[in-house]
Amino acid sequence: MARKTFELLLASRSPRRREILKEAHLSCLVISSNSSESFDENLTLDENLKCVAETKVMAVVSKLSSSKLKGKVILGADTVVAVGKMVLGKPKNVDDASRMLGLLNGKTHVVKTGFCLFCPDQKRKVRRVITTKVGFRKLSKVDIQWYVNSGEPFGKAGGYGIQGLAQNFVNYLNGDFLNVVGLPLNAVREELRKHRWYVAGNHKRTQRSKKNSRS
Image (cartoon, rainbow, N blue to C red; front, side):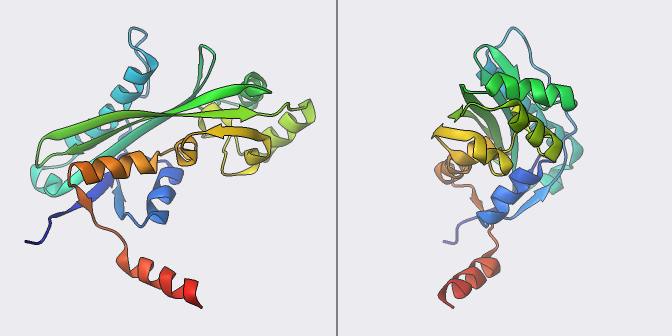
C-alpha cells in the first residue's frame, strides 16, 4: 500500500525557515499568518513560544477552506534569545540592536524555538520547544558598531544571525545549530516521521544534487 504524502504549509514570512526547508528538500507553500507574537506574562517562556507557534498555525487554518486544508500539514514557529531573565526578540532600531549585542557580549545565552505541527485531516497537533546554548566571545565597541552597520541584526531574534557575519562572535555552541538560525529541522523531521506525516520533497533537485556531487 502506497503511503500517503502530505503537503507542508509554512505559516511564516521568515526567509531563513524557508531556506532551511528548501536545503532539506522539503517542499512547502508559504502562507503568512500575520498573527500576534505577544507573550502572556502568566505563562512560562516555553509555553509562550508554543502558544505563539500554535497561533500562527491556526491563523493559517482560519484563512483556508476545508477542501484546501485536505492533505496538508501546517508548520508554525517562533524563535527568541534569552540571556539571564531577559528575553530578546527582534531589534526595533540601531540603538536596540546595539543594546542586545551588549547584553550578549562575552556571555552564554540560550536560543529557543517553539514549533507547532498540525494535520487538519487527523485533527492532530504537536507542540515542542528546542533549546540551544550559544556563547559569545568578548566584543569591542568597534565589533558591535561594525556589525550593526552591516544591517544584519535586523529581523533576527537577539539581533544577530549565526549563519552570517555573527559567526565570528560565537565561541561556544551546544545543541542544534539550525535552531539558532530559526528552525530546529531535526526535531521537526522527527515529529513528521513519528506521526507518519510524509511530506513531499523536491526529488528532482535531490537527484541533480547527487549527480553534481559525483562530477
